[in-house]
Length: 136
Image (cartoon, rainbow, N blue to C red; front, side, top):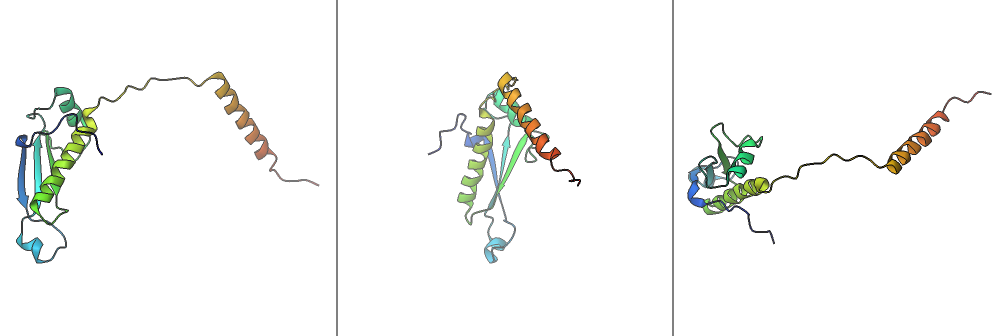
């Protein structure tokens, strides 16, 4: 079971619009507007400022210059299921930036690790050197 989201997205801040789905699907695709466009205005949302900043810093083509995240869902036949799928994907994006990434601290290899590496290199060098042409 997945952990509950740290910052649940408020559905009142999300704008949904129904559109016709693309691709195969027979007459249902031509008649029914079952696909969903979800628009989420990141700067105007109720998320904490640091989460907003990390969201806006994402290199994601779904985020417009104005900071609106656009998600399209057309996997399912019904509007409700596509709406749920789009909300779930939005929550995944928010959860992905919710945790502050740990800063990487540079470390040095130990003396023993360096010695083992150099020993392995010299053994490999000896193996390759012995592959030369044999003279009679």
